[in-house]
Length: 61
Image 1: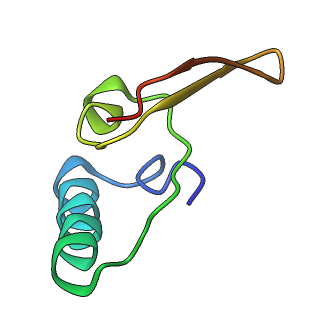
Image 2: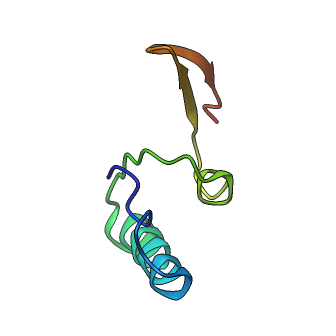
């Protein structure tokens, strides 16, 4: 998902993130998301940071 909450109001954005978390936990769905929002990024179990098309950090567990 590319910026899945980017054009949403705060409440709807939070609901989308909760839905993603539920799908991951309950259904085992893997999500790959692109975001510039650090609050959303901090919810992820793994974060990969890209700069100028190159991976600069991988926070794999």
